[in-house]
Image (cartoon, rainbow, N blue to C red; front, side, top):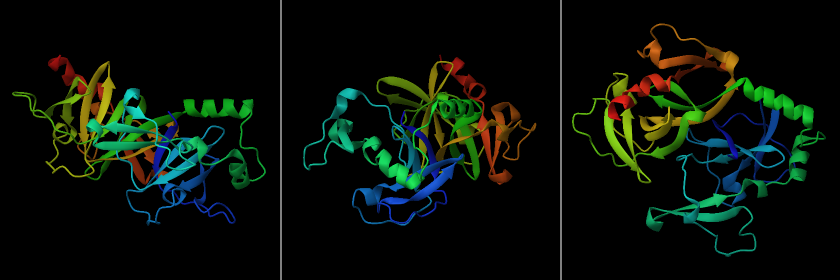
Length: 295
């Protein structure tokens, strides 16, 4: 709930005489955000920004900041009983790192970060200038109205095309896992997966759209979505980011799109960056109507 967006690294402005781990500040929808380099914050070696580098736009309590990471792996839901307290190996333990989640019978450990303990309001105000970091009631109402006019999407790629799914339908984003094949299933159904005891059908979006097969890679992901109460996994080439943008940038689709995707499967086309970037917003209910046959 603390993560508002996941975006590619924007151009940011360097700020003199600030903490070493603050890369600079960036303006996102007229809000000034400090960008914290998590590598530098934890005293790790510097690494050049790559195509996989992402910025998590995070609620820090009284303000919002960006946290720059090497890459985003997945979006997980985990039971609270698999989280253990962090060992007290330093005086600062328990401030920024609040626990360890043990997955796969302890073979995979995930350290849990508390971003609100990374940068203080005073530090933020120094970066922000004389303007107070906390918003008054009128500003908060303005932000709420702005959210009502925004679309919030998880975006992903298949070949060179970029697609979007409304975030309210997305449950998780997982790395590729073992899929059990189903005899005589529709050609576009890869099979089923076991997600914490729940059996979920998996749809290969490439096959569904009639695109050529492609080998699975390290970037292949399964997006777990919920449409009319039914959970389904969707296999995509890679997940790009989590975006917010104004609904005025969305146009209705034409009858047949250049990608070959029929109009029925697309709710709209988001035109970003002055039309240089187009995102096809999918109609999940139409695409996942096959689940009626599987129930």
